[in-house]
Image (cartoon, rainbow, N blue to C red; front, top):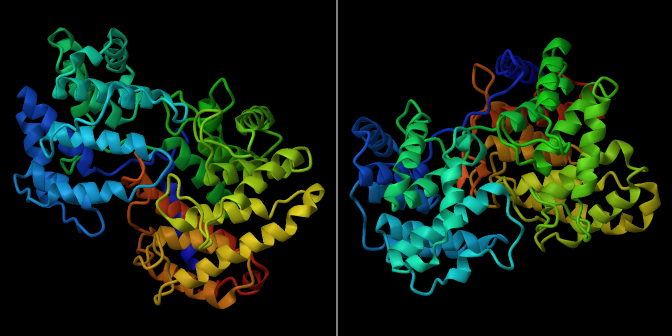
Length: 511
């Protein structure tokens, strides 16, 4: 298919000399507004502030789709309306992820810091302890400590602040602080530390690094500065299946092996030490698909890492063993371990049982780091097709779950042939790519053909597939890594073209 060849050629140009696909993030309103507020409070960097304001003025945000950023933009530009606090409350009330308590607390504090709402008198010190919630990754400890300080200072409870909180936040402003912690956590740390004059040098150092990540459009990079490891692993998997040059693929794989952490896992970007299941699963898949003998040691260490991450209920978390498991993470780990499924038969069986037990009534699963329903669906469906022979008793349950997801895909396909992030949302290329990966394993020629035609028609002259922001962080706030839509479009075309019917007609645009 010509569309796949153009896309393969474009993705090959995104691989750096070191083998990394950078996966840079576009600017986001949330971090831009918070950075602007911080710099205004301190009276620093007027030129940087002017560029941020220029970025905000240039943003056209549909409040029906993104009420949070619409309200924040209006506030920063002095255009707030009386309804804005209620718009934010309604937005947060819809968030039902397992981290909802912490996220609602975070945005309650941020709205108060920005002057959009008063500090909530109902929040107590215990609300900032994390008691009863999942085990935290490193940057969440920073976020919670910063929020505790901000709320304590704003609500008149300085006695809530401990020396340990201050020490933790000052450490984030060390030489490598911004690289190890997501940018939002660093901005919150700086907002908190500005209350303590004795930490002015740490604040100044942190602000100097913050302004260094201002994008050319004047906005501030969101949440994380990039997803180089994740993008390299997924792009590598797509490119090896599309027939890219072996030398290029080896360069990508060697880069990833060099970034493997001592625990056998991978982080999402170079310079971060917090490993996670998602990146490790994709890195493992790519290395094994490319050349398992050459990368056998890295593969073995990654397998051991994933095995250790499974919880007693069969699920896998994102970051920390023993924390709340997630469907997409569980499916990703099972897919990565599948080539040795008889060796890991008990583990895979427990994982598939966890997936089948957590499907929603409409055929979907919880959304994870992607905002698209079809992302978790394709990962779950791929995992369930790997059922070990020893787990034949689960086959009927797997068939039921597959059928429910297939019915969702049929029902949610739009008239133009594509899929949106949720049923009734407008079609976009990356959600459609996820759906096509899932459909490539079913005898659904008409549904799949319409989807492929929609996707192919979205391709740009240079081979790219621009799409809407798909990644979420902090969940459910969207941020955009443009190259991801290209990567998953290539993965989708690979899956479709691998089907027997398409092998006979590779030049047919419907395949």
